Length: 385
Image (cartoon, rainbow, N blue to C red; front, side):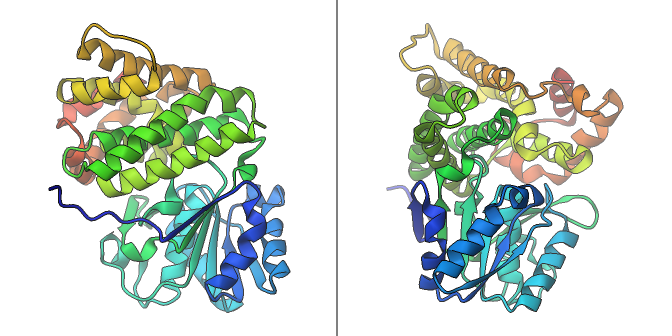
C-alpha cells in the first residue's frame, strides 16, 4: 500500500458566474469586512468593484488593495498587511493570477502572526492563525487557489517560498467567466505554466504518488485539449472552464508531488529579468524535458498519448520526443517570444543564472528526474538564447 499525505482546500466551487456568490461564501466563513487583494489591471477591468458589489449584496463590506506586482516583493506584501489592519479585515480574498493569490495567502496569515516574512520562509515554519481565505483565479495557470505555497521576492531580490498547510484557502472559487476575452498572450503563458505543473508532478523523482498522477493526467488532457481553442476563440466558455479546471487540478498535483528543473531554471528569469512566471517556464521547458528523456522516457511516452491522442509511435523514445515537440509547438503557436535574447538576456548573464540554479535552488533539481551540473544548466539556457 502506498503511504502518502495529500493536502487540498476543503471546498472547491466551480461555476461560471460564480463571482456573484462571493458574498454568501464569505458570510459562511464568518467574514464581515473582506480585504480583496488584486492587481491594477483587474481594477481597470472592474473586477475589484464587482467583487465588492457581490460582498455588499450579502451585507458585507469590501476593501480593495490593487498594488500587487508580478513576483510580489516583500514591500508589497507588507503594504497589503498594513492596509488590511487599517481596514479591520476579518477575511481575505485573493482575486487574480498567482501573484495576487500568493500575496493574499500570506496577508491572511501575517495578520495573525508576529513573524517576519523571512521567518515564514521554508517548510512549515509559519506560525499564527490564518484569517478565513477565499482565492478566485482570473487566469488558468498557477493553480495557487489550491496550493499551500506562496512564492515572493525577498528584500535581497531572491525568490522566497513559504510552504505551510496554513496557506491552503478555505474556498477556491473558479468562475470561468472571469477569464473570457483575455488576450492570447495572457491566456497562453499561464496555460503553459499549468502544463509544466502537470508534467513535472507526473515525473517527480521524490514525491510522485498515485493521487497526483491521476490529477496530472486529467489536467494535461484538459489543458492540451483546449489550448488552441482558447487562443483562437477567447469567448468559448466551455473551453475556458476546462482550462480553469485543468489548471486547478495541475495545482493540486504539483503542490503535493513537487515541480522540477523547469521551475528551477525559470526562477532567475523572473527575479533578474522580470519575465512572467508562466512565460519563463514555457521558455525553458523544451530543453529541460529533452534533457530529462534518458531518465523519464517511459513517463513522457505515457503523456504523449494524452497530448497526441490517437497517434501511434514506434518506441518510447519516439513518443517522448514527440511529446516534447508538441509542447514546444504550443509555445510557438502562442505568439510569445521563444528566445531569451528577445527578453534582454545575454550570454554573459547565463553563468550567474546557472550558478543560482545549482547552488540555491537545489530542492527542485533533487525532484527532477535527472540531476544537472552547472555546465549542463548553462547549456540548457544557451539552447534558447
